[in-house]
Image (tube, rainbow, N blue to C red; front, side, top):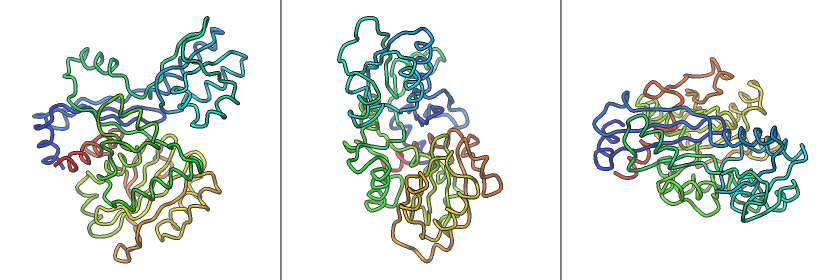
Length: 350
């Protein structure tokens, strides 16, 4: 892993890797010529959480607000609902309204009004998953170089006529059908239906990927984990603040994907799901019936065995204590997605 990445960095220069979740945005500045242990790293509140804090400030001040900017993570939704429930007006540009919901009828039904320009007496609130000015200021204040490339990951439900959950699993199914190698799931240019990743790519100018892909690559960039997958099938679980994604992996290739909302499954329920998932017996409809996103499977591989060895990542992994090996690639669990994104793109670019 390190040889591939260091060669890539020598050719590219400093690379800023961002893993943007619902609670935090985790950042790694990979620099050529330095050991990875010396690469600067940050764990900061997510952009959506910062937007939520700003909305709550304006609610306390009894100010109407105008959302503008780009599609982004919707983690500010509850704060927005509280603002509307307080009898305060919310306006938004159509582009910013997409961060609330892809269906404009749903946005309007909530009470949000559309406006291209800031109405009188409204406080503007900017939406974006990535701010070049913020990162330039932070890195300069820390005496660090600006990146020559930005790699970024975020979860994207996408714009799908059949609904977000079905559409998201359709995306996983299409990725599995196209290639079982997760490094190939990093988009140089994301497809149009992945509206959040399209907006993120537009801001960073660099490759983007789903956070589930980032975490999976983060596990596999651990040489021991990758080597174990070459001997027998393994299960990789990323317990995020909002979503839990599990993958069946054999010989470094993905054989199945499971996704559910982290807070909606008890440990016992989740472990029962995993028993069926490892057998490729868990239908997507059963997961969706319990509020999750579903499952997607590639071709069944008998040589993989039962996918019993389990590796666990993510900020909410404590609910799976004792159910597998807790990973911390290169000594930092929260940066696993960043390391995975860097390693995956370095392979693709090689």
